[in-house]
Length: 172
Figure 1 (cartoon, one colour):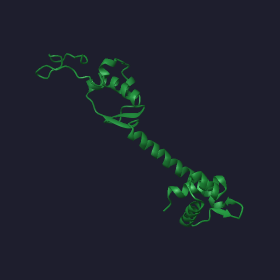
Figure 2 (cartoon, rainbow, N blue to C red):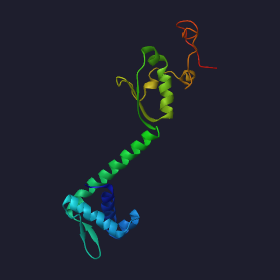
Figure 3 (tube, rainbow, N blue to C red):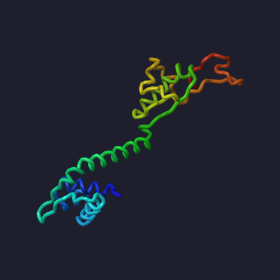
Figure 4 (cartoon, helix red, strand yellow):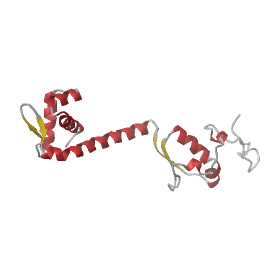
């Protein structure tokens, strides 16, 4: 099986046309680079480099494989970046479900703040209907209700504002 170390070694040797300079670029020894290239060539069943005492050149098979090796390493790095963003809560998906009233009057403000704090995040409704600009749909920007500690005051019966149907403001 091909590993990333083999691809990195291949790309560096191809770029520098030298096993020694590739080893320096990767902070490895020249025998390690040679071993990685030999393992890659065995795995692929093709010679990737023409070696002489003074130079190293890509073979036709090496030239054919080069763009694929570059793309594979690039995709791996993009995947690592995406995972790092997810770990740091800079990206990912936030799946939501809300009642019509909450979704119409309160959710747009909350989503606006969410998008400011997590620019790479993607809010989705339970049905996938929310888009990246869902917070702008209602055109509202009343920040008081978007406060993360916002909780309507409740009376002893659990009703908002002490009377049914009356909205309350943020805590004071």
